[in-house]
Image (cartoon, rainbow, N blue to C red; front, top):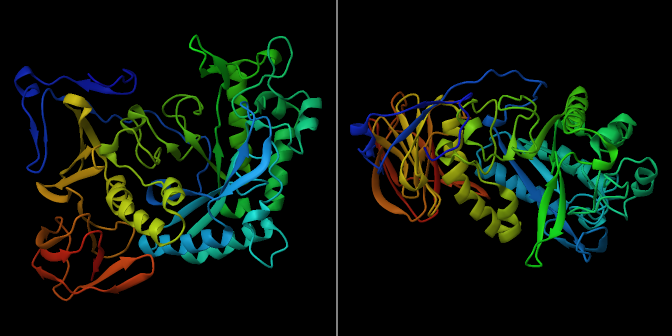
Length: 497
């Protein structure tokens, strides 16, 4: 078995020797070598909070606005400079373009680097906006952010913040207060612990002294976070990342638990304080999403604290929980679906046309498929040689993900819905029967078959979809359940009754 999975959460089914050596063949892809099958098995699950959104039915992303720069190896304070990737006005244009591309799917966008001198600047404070990002004519950046949070609603988008509850920097407006209050992580000898990215807040000490509640209350008074109903906490770790020099003279990170050895709180108390933070946001009507599973989780597989993770590298959770209970971006078991993360796309390609065109391609190849799969019950994962994996779903759906080229194969009842960079998938968040067709390399007069139960009349309408909107598309023909069309490389077409 190539995956380390818990015997308490997943039932391993050993195939017979004769079947184990046979390739799994869908008609459009195979899984060679020995096939190890892990059945999906729902673990006991109960929400510890009340999620305001079903993130499995939304597109969730971050937009990276700016990054503070640092000179010191331990990054004790930023140097006053920053790199701006996207202003508030540019973020607004990106949100409009994303909404047109995604055909109005409900969206959540978290702003990264919205404060002070950008991402990682001045924590534990988060009470001022980044003036380099504000709109001309606004009094300050917070006014611009409030404007964006309201204006984005017109484009089916909830805008909220990316924050950090863990880091502490010497140039923060709160640093001296937190140092005097004795809530910063300490070594066993009582000295402040230097970590990767400044010092660290001891959650248990901060919560016990009421400072956590003060921070959250102040943030919610400045910006309409409760109206957004969601917030993203970055680096919500259970352990302190402490750099050290290895025998080769190179820096490595050692994760220290408990967070603050000098405070004598236990790891269990650290975890309880993190739970208290999530519950406090929940009491204000705000969901907390977080960076990843592992030491950012609270409890076991069926924890029920976070409705969405950004780095969801957890085969166990994907084989033990439904998509509505746990999902995210950058998934580990990609055969069960994987989302595009707009943050690196727009950092690399910029907030203009090039960034939106790249986003459109990745949306079709990833999130469009992921939305379709999230609506289906998972039945099993089958692992072959070289960690290849096939996903098995209800309604006769099978998938296989190829890391090379980031290609996803999707087959329903033996008929293809996605393969070799071509996609023919329903937009499940929209009413009525519809199809989104996309081709990475283009094709001429290719015929697809509609999934069982779907119907498109011969006079159905079609449009080419871009970040600028939609334009009529006519190069297609519907004959019964067959749809024949011609697409240019990178073209996205929406067909509907």
